[in-house]
Length: 470
Length: 104
Image 1 (cartoon, rainbow over the protein chains, first blue to last red):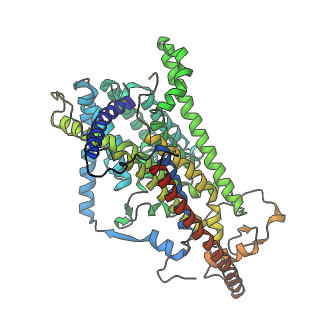
Image 2: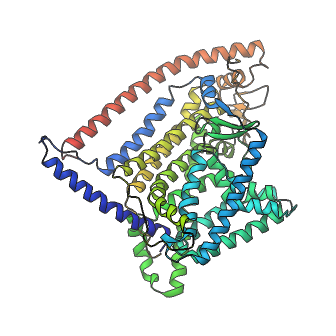
Image 3: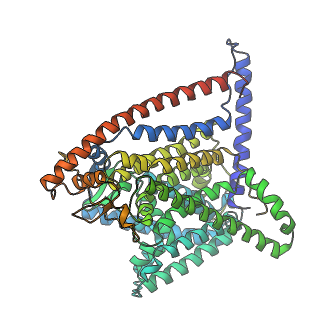
């Protein structure tokens, strides 16, 4: 059983509850005083269209905001959070110790704990606590990963001094490959349901990352090559709490995205696009539409034992890479059209790099829409298993989400896009001269964003099913 | 054009494309060398990004370009407000039709 299957089980539980709730409310309504038409459900196509309309309307509204200094003042606003050095060091040490402790606990529980996924501490901590909950904190609160990262702590403690120079031309491409590989493994393998396999992966990653840090140096490895650290660093730029020169600063959400960027290396743009694509892909493969598409293609090979399994995995890999390529092309196309619209002589790659931070709120909005429900539903199970780390939990406790949660998820996707439109507007104002040229430069991006909002709203609104043949 | 809040325009250090068609370049910024396809664009750029290094001629050109853009912007904003109003009305009507009947 894979991670999306777990979601499917929960979705059935939620659906059953919400059908009962709907029936109850229907009976109550029919017996009520008002004979007027009852509350009609908004059809899903209308919800999707509304999402697109909201994004388009927000662009129109933003084009009324043309005061350069005003935009800069809003984005630059900051409140310094007092962080005395002693407190800072103590906090970092505490977080690092906690990170290492959790890693040790996960490795131990993967071996010693029960094999049912929903009662195993390793599965719940990694997928619910870390992949869902902690990742949400990096863009909702702030990026604490440089402190929490247990492998970084271990690399520092082991004092592996690597000084092999990292070739500049590789840039961020190894981390792009690493991110795609990690997501592919997570989708096609039973890692989400088999604690032993998860433990093996965590152990394997530990070895790989410590070796990499030993070879290239801790800062280079975690700053440029490790995909996980890069993901959290990028998510952290959306968060309100930022690290400034004098300690912590409080900014508006997404405002740090308009700061002068330092991500100039080749492939850094592709990484952001990859991050956006993998969050979409994770949700896309768990939809009935995907199964309708992939099922007939895979049915001839699916039953053929090991070879069939490999072919299925390869199929998902091809889909992952094709989608990534498609997203990259779409982004490049939008940036090229934007550049042509204002008759700019800037290099196309420079324009792409300049606007790519505006994609991060979209990824964050989609991530929270996708994972907030999952996290809330399984949080009682996580708390329960923390009390009994190595087994002894008989009944899995899950929280049941209210029926309006689906609408909340759609709202979060749209909110991510609204923030992205604002960030892109602010970025355009800094790149192109005047006021009309920046506004006109946004037309292609807004069209792409509207299409993407509607598509991801549709994906989020779909019932979750297990991906076919996995 | 120093602002009261000190929120100065930072100079975007962006690369210019390598193969530029020289005929298409109408003006170049004398401070950073960035080419533009329209003189007005260059004038606006100089005033916004290099406010302290402007000569008085450049400042005059910047003011003129801003004035010309201001008028165009006003009509653009009028169209934006109308578009927002129409979009809002259409959305509300769409919801009324869909929720109130079986037509869609």
